[in-house]
Length: 383
Image (cartoon, rainbow, N blue to C red; front, side, top):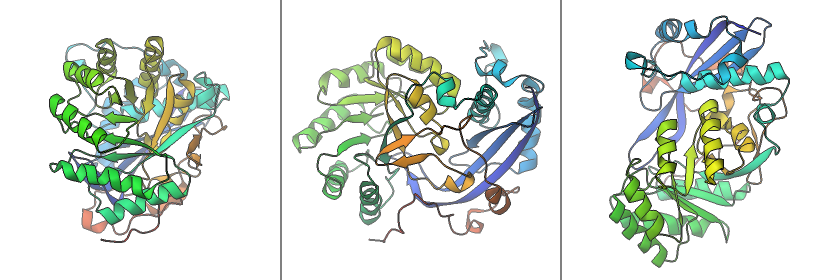
């Protein structure tokens, strides 16, 4: 099996709600589907997304991919790419002009697993086929009514763990949202909070103590302070021993390694680049550090989660992407299951390619209504 061609499809559509955190917000999805095509006709699928700035027109995306990415893929066996290690130097140490990296990794691993005739999680060494999922709202910009509807819906379909966004300039609002969540989900639910680096170290310690004194137990606090404030993260680990520090989301593989070497996190947060996640996950296992899978596009991270021994949780954020594939990942009763199909199990929907592809950039006002998904909650009432 060797790569002989590729296909790029540009999607742009409205989100079903405003998503975001203490630092950012977005109300539109800007997504690129990459299909790598092998000489036997097999197709590997990966996705790239630009969270805050729309992708350029498809013609420009294709020009950049052809110039920067395809020369390193053309004619190569996918399995020969999956574990490739490079040592970039000088001007070669740079990111591509568009965020192709994760899409390429996922597509290459999809093809490699298909060639082996195995689901990706089995190819990666997994012995279990499901992990626990927690409901994450990306909810910072929702009003209270929308917040309650979203998490109440998540509770009604079987979730028992919930992560909310904090880091508001008015800390009373953070306390209010934690209390509001607990009021509208089941007794005994696990609660996580995510500040997205909104606080300083001493500030975070003081606020976590106020949360504890208000009677709120937390499973973890995610990214409370700057990603590379290792001294501050150690302060929080020691000073707030009643909860766990989850960090690493914003760091590359090198940064994640240093985070662990500095003993600066209780849980390592990883995302969707298969090769990088497995490498850093093996190191975490060697150090006995738990790993959590943050948001991965269409939950493809379930394959790494099932393969890494230190993973207990995968994040699900109710983003309206399911219409892009023929069969999304199965989530039931607060668990997500990895498909038993060869590869990662996701196939681009021809209906989506026909109805939602947008070769040219559209203004936000032209995107219309958000596409519906089977797992999204009922329309949320306005407060």
